[in-house]
Image: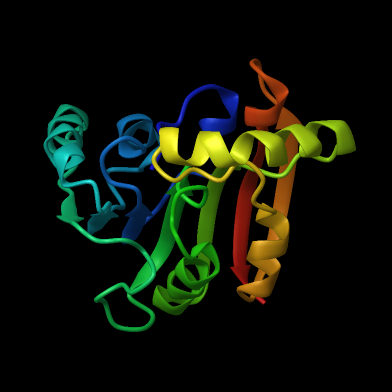
Length: 188
């Protein structure tokens, strides 16, 4: 679960209503500004890194938003089907062991017509950069909490049953680490 920084962190829409966030510690720090507090009825954060929960609680208090934190990974969410109208996923899919299963779970807990708002780094479009992502991965993954530099975010979204509107670009920094995807998706 990674922090959301820069222009890619801004979802295309404010997160309304009942929401779930994959990544409770780091990611919610910047996300809270994008929640419409007058419309949030429940906010649940999912993050297996229990050491980050205290930070998430602090940030939620600062933003005036209550958050319920679950200390688990997103592959098996203990919530009923169609529980949330919005799921926010930022800098998370890179480090979830089974990102496809996590996305399937996010789809399962969304109400019909619900939105997945996402911002992730991933597989670069340039062959030379992809080669560097592949070369760096054996060292990068263990050093960066299991982060996968080259996950194909659009392909994962599609395989999980989402229809996504996606934007992408390189952000500042080393190109193997800075190709980003952001947008929103609904169940196909």
